[in-house]
Amino acid sequence: MTPPSEIRVVHLFAPLLEALLALLAELSDDDWRRPTACAGWSVKDVAVHMLAGDLGNLSRQRDGWPSGIEPRSAEDLARQINAHNERWVEAARFVSPRMVRALLEVTGPQVCAYFASLDPSATGEVVSWAGPDPAPVWLDLAREYTERWHHQQHIRDAVARPGLREPRFFAPVLAAFVHALPVAYRDCGAE
Image 1: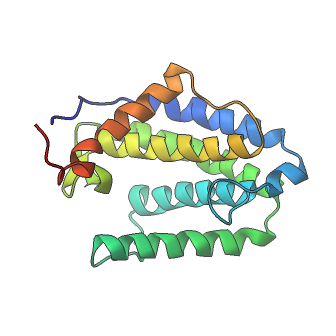
Image 2 (image 1 turned 180 degrees about the vertical axis):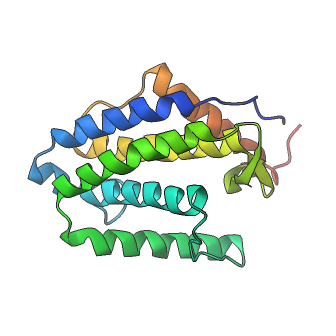
């Protein structure tokens, strides 16, 4: 099975960020405390996770600062990432929702600018769900896009707001996930 061709998403990061910031601006304190589909995480916790993603991308990729995550296996990578995510959420429990949103207003545009500066045809990092080898930057950006879209959906679902399911936002998510099919079904016998 050959995955579909290149997915271009750089132009969608800014409008996705704008939608997130507009959504967060209208939430009540009770909304920020609502549970999400992410087990044990509130709306605020998911927003903090998104902030941590911004800071990690800027620090590790843009600035070349080591992340401290050095996996020995795929299982070890998942364990280290999950522990890292939990530390971030726990450390930010004292940070107000207003401050979380303000920090996303600072980091979000920097991430958008950094992503726009990349050559989508260059070889990037491994996108584990699409294969074990370094992937083209466009696929890594599509993975980043799915992460941001998906977590915004967690927040939207938790606070009963409509999702971003119009084709402009949703089609690239589906297109990116198609790249996971060869890996997900590699051990399945079929004609």
